[in-house]
Length: 194
Image 1: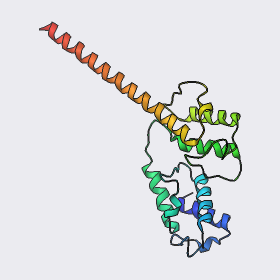
Image 2 (image 1 turned 180 degrees about the vertical axis):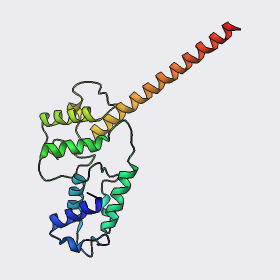
Image 3 (image 1 turned 90 degrees about the vertical axis):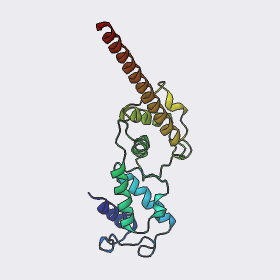
Image 4 (image 1 turned 135 degrees about the vertical axis):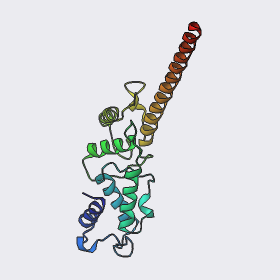
């Protein structure tokens, strides 16, 4: 289903708006009479429904005026999503928390407290740890109980990014060392043949 259809269906079903009244030019404020709470609710539902969409700005919906603005923003993020050997940890944590809560979607920010804001217990945290370790390729935790130290969603994202970054630096250093060793062997071999 295209982004426009997801937005249209979400607005229609969650805000009791006739689908025929929603077009790309529909203005959130003037046509739909959305206030900041309505926008936040829409943002929450869209972030849970749009796969692989992880916004760059936590309050991105505040900058949207029309349905088309939302569609363009979402599609741009999806297109520009950096493909790497690591799945976006924020996306994985959001997906995992939504699966655990099994309720109406919540807005998950980097500052969201796992226990106070989301009510997660130690078993829930273990489930998130399992999902992150399973889906973040290139992520190698330093110990088995790393999740116990995490208080916010941002703590998890930072831990994963630092771990992956350190691993890449280590791999790069090993690669440089191998190249230097190979180069010195080649020079030694050439000097012995002369």
